[in-house]
Amino acid sequence: MLKQSISTAAVASPTVMDEASLIRAAQQGDQDAFATLVHSYDQNVLRIAMNLLRSPEEAKDVYQEAFLRVYRNLDSFRFDCSFPTWLYRIVTNICLDHLRKRKVRREECAVAESAGGEYNLLEAVEEHRADNNPQRKLLTGELRTRIDRALSDLTPRERMVFELRHFQGLRLRAIGESLGTTEEAAKNCLFRATQKMRAALGDYA
Amino acid sequence: MSCDEIRDLLVLYAYGELTFDQEESVDAHLAVCEACKLEQAALAELHAAADDQAVAPSLELLSACRQELRAQVAVMAKVSTSEPFWRRWFSGGTWVAKPAMTMGLLAAGFFGARLVPVTNVAAPVARNVRFIEPASDGQVRIVYDEVSQKEIAGRVDDRMVREMLLSATRSPNDPGLRVDSVEYLKTRCEREEVRKAFVRALVSDPNEGVRLKALEALKPYAGEMEVRSALTKVLLADQSATVRTQSIDLLVNTRRNESELAGVLQDMMRREENSYIRQRGRTVLQAMNASLETF
Ligand SMILES: [Zn+2]
Image (cartoon, rainbow over all chains, first blue to last red; front, side, top):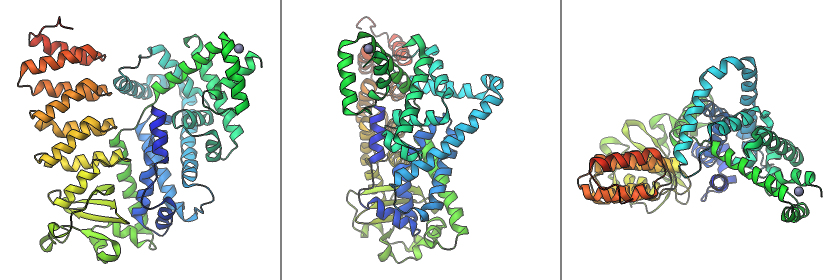
């Protein structure tokens, strides 16, 4: 259900002015065209950032960084790939940077963090989830903790591929393109990510 | 193929990323191997658990991001001299200097005392509203598609502005836009067409944030029949526990007819699974001395 709504949103494109015309207009400085372009994709961008980073503040930073980069570099967009591929390349690069920085931080202060703010955020997020899914059988706290930990133990690249394939419903070929690699490499990433999570789940599943 | 080989394929099988031949092999194997079938079920369990961990950004966050981006782009555009359009967009009044005909621009109420009465312009029929944002002097700026994109600025009291906002509440692709339009319209909730739009959004908008916004906007009118029946519908059928919670609170706090409310709550208790909402219903029913035995 989740994947469905995301992929429909991803392909929803402007109906009146086609995307190529919008991009050309934006390249010539038409800010309304730029805003329309942004609004066609920004919900997905924010969703990716939020789901990967679990922090509204960081998701907001990713959003700004990504679209400002698009704005600054739109001139150099030459239509040699699709606009979403180009955009996702920018977004995934920024998200990967954030994930890598976070990984370093986490390793530096693993002790401090387990007592600190991040857990409060996770709790808030969990409450939100429980609220929204009353029908779904609620996961036990233990299982949740395991999944959260397994997700955050993935390498940034594995986490990104899992996000794009599992949550955003992108095909592996498109993911490879966005990450500047092959479909085969994306496939291997997804495979490793799933195996790691499966192992972390152990006898729970 | 051996079980180990099949298990390696199961991961991609779940995502439909295998070749035709590989998928055939997996299908054939799963039909006869109980152990691999169990492994497949475990994987499905893992996926469901991961789905449960997914978080969606709020529409408020989306709105805040859009506004900040606009502000930042405005700063960048000011620095650059080669982009007069950006300046027109962001620096208040200068954009009207562009001839209205070539811009496809409709300025309603923009010239203050000398404003062209909005009613003189043909009211727009259903249009595709792209976005809404605050303009100077308490006005609202709406960008919408016709043959090309045009814009209009005016007060919510202006008929045309209001009609555009009303049509934006039904904008199919952009929940952020629907939330913004409800926000602008909610000060005009005394108008029947506005309440009708909110009731429709509350009952049938696919986005939880929009439904919550509509519910909030309808609060002052929770005593009205049509609003109450919408709230009841939502309490019994909405997928979001947050929406149902808000709905039960509002119905209870504004009740006039106890027996009607008791009936609704009893219906609710039969299907509700959320413990907070059940507890709330039980408390109210007990307070009303309604029979708890009927469910
Ligand atoms: Zn087997």
